[in-house]
Length: 104
Image 1 (tube, rainbow, N blue to C red):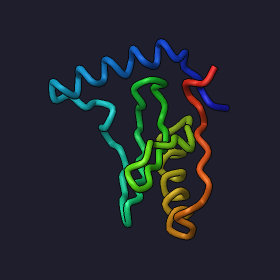
Image 2 (spheres, one colour; image 1 turned 180 degrees about the vertical axis):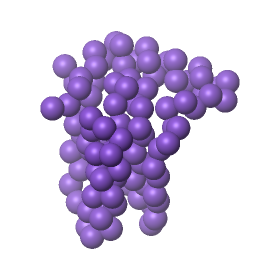
Image 3 (spheres, helix red, strand yellow; image 1 turned 90 degrees about the vertical axis):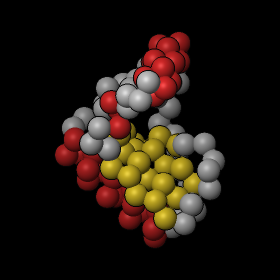
Image 4 (tube, rainbow, N blue to C red; image 1 turned 180 degrees about the horizontal axis):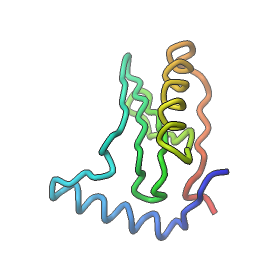
């Protein structure tokens, strides 16, 4: 089950991230897994700034990110990251469905 975040709280946490990023602190990127090829990026963050959980996001052709999966543990995140790389390499046009962390 996806851990949801109130949209207002999500926006506030995003604002905090933008401030931290400006100051050179990208704590949420610690331990992240990223692979990119052919204008596709599969990025798994171990401590997402809004939920505190690991999540995998995918971006194609500089379009908006799609958060495709959330995990309970880092081990699950590592397995999920590998799974999404395989999926995207086998079918780069696979339909991506956002898990809707900020959806109410």
